[in-house]
Image (cartoon, rainbow, N blue to C red; front, side):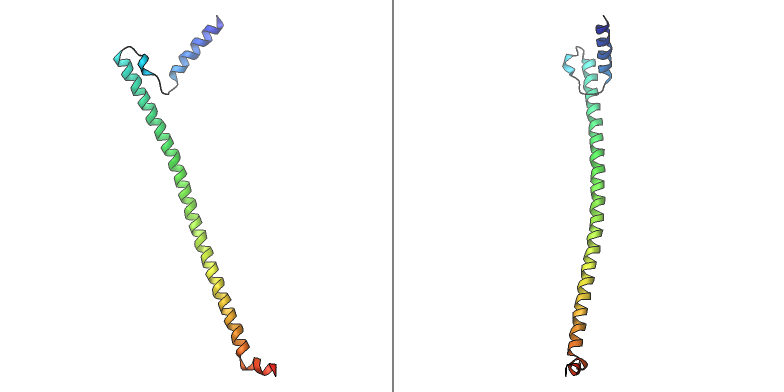
Length: 107
């Protein structure tokens, strides 16, 4: 007897859980319409949740992309600065090697 009571309680609770229901089992048009509307509402809420979730993911990805772009720009500037410093150093070394004092020091 206890088993059947628990089964009835859980069956009653199951109807309160939103989800897709089989509406063809309803006999009256009003109940079918209500059932179908419930299904539509459930689907719209589910789509809204999924859309919000993916929008958050897209926003996070876009923020990460912007951060990576900023990092890339900083790294490119560093590389250009290093190339400029290297070229200047090579030019300075060449000037020192070609200077008259360097030639006189070799004699």
